[in-house]
Amino acid sequence: MKKVIFTLVALLAVTFTMSAGNKKVRFSEDADLAFGNDFFVVEPISYLGFGYHLKNSQMDIAQDAANTEFFINIMELGIRPFKGGMFAIGVDYDLDQYRLDKNHFWGAEAGKNAWIRSLSMSPYKSVKYSRLNVHTFSIPVSFEFDAGKCAFRLGAAGEYNLPAVNKEKLVKSEGGIVKNKVKNIPVNEFSYSFFGSISYGGLGVYVKYNPVCQFAEGSGPSFKTLTLGAVIGLGM
Image (cartoon, rainbow, N blue to C red; front, side, top):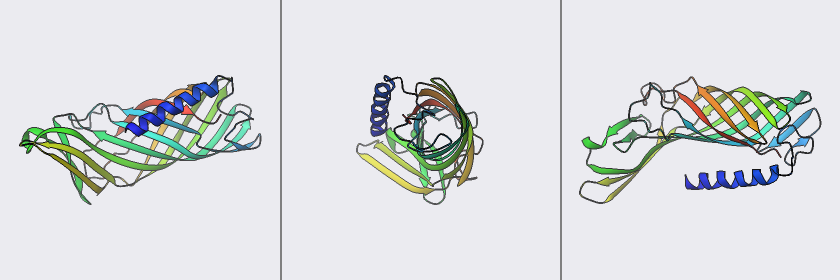
């Protein structure tokens, strides 16, 4: 997690520095990372984002408000039917992390399910950390409109989710540390989401809603995600 934060801060600094030259972040004809022509563009590493999953009534009360999402674009293909507008399709990588409050931690069994355990009903004294990681590859399809330095984006994405991984570090009541890592926890393999963003000079905010439950039926808590966060356009 520290590496992700460090990378995000570093990219923010680079973005601010490059934006100082009054370059347009999206749809600029002199894009450093993009190649193509006025009508068609191919752009690697077009954007990245970091957000928080809001608490959901379908999630157990043990949910921690610090559930996070990190995503980065791998490649984006765009067509500009008119000046300032672009239809785009891309490939993104996404990491979702689900945490619990300090009174609960995840229990998990490989190939079967994940559940929420109460610290008071366990042989442990405290929780250093307990999180479920879900890695996703998605194909977002969107329309973007550039109005000067402002950019607006709306779209939807089809998602392929890899099995979840549980990582935790617990302190025993009698002392000592226990580390657990459980792989191959079933999730809904395919899902979809809707998203929108508003940015200025390459920095913006986004909202995303996934109407499909993260876990496969019977494999974990039944909840959906509504995410708010920051997005950085890297297509300088």
